[in-house]
Image 1 (cartoon, helix red, strand yellow):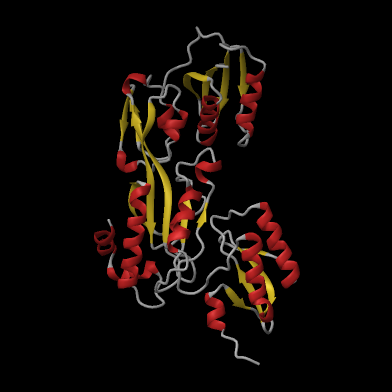
Image 2 (image 1 turned 180 degrees about the vertical axis):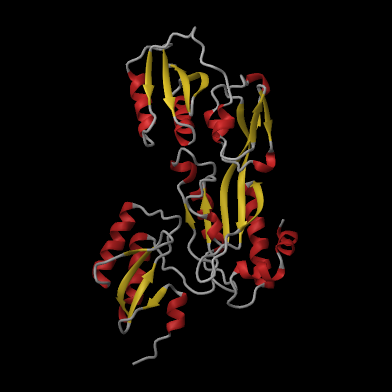
Length: 83
Length: 283
């Protein structure tokens, strides 16, 4: 598990903790909508299903997870907008 | 008045009701799939020959209740001619096959559950066996169609293959894996095949495609049932290819006909004669 590196410019951040599936997926998708290709979204999410579903969804949408890290009990992933 | 042959009617999917001379007609439905036009024809038949109601069964089937004995032949002919829907079966036979939508609709589907269900229906439906025999086909280990509760359950599975060059050691797969099949230690991935339930979550979530499709096939459960004495099916094989599947089913049904006592569910036969004996005969 790598630490989130400070050097990456984060365009936007979204916290999905406490959200019920599929709200975490929808929130992430919605946040990506008005971002430019190449920009980075930080998503804070709970482990288990949220981590699985959001990771899978951003991959299916053609974006790329460039960092995965822990944030206490939760996870932080950095998603680079792919298209 | 002629004598009513209840047994013959029941074998043909007509079940006696509490009300005199009245039957519920079971239809032959595969995997819960019907066209909208078939549904309209069923609705028309229910209005014409029943009391205008339809019962959706626990096995994705349809029954039309309140059909009078005098209308049995008429409703059969009408559904067959107008909607290509045949009457169902009861009794000691292979029953209606249940299935999820598999690869035809579901993003998580790993096998063509509907297609396999259609083939099973075509090959084995209503075949005589010692006691009722139920098939279920489900597209992935989420097991929505509960293959473990059926006499013969089929579930799609996928074995991941690891591509070391692509792995960045982020640890996401270890976190997502629902079992202990994946461990990441010092950036190195350790995969334990025995722990893997073939769900493919690692493949679909890996950010760098370091997990890819290794092998896709069917997990086979036998002897599952619910009823008065519930029993979960035994997993006897994994990653079985579809071209080998029907041979396995043939052998399983032969075994059941040979070893099963009349009226004995398959799970009880397996418990009585031993799972190893079944495996020897079918695998």
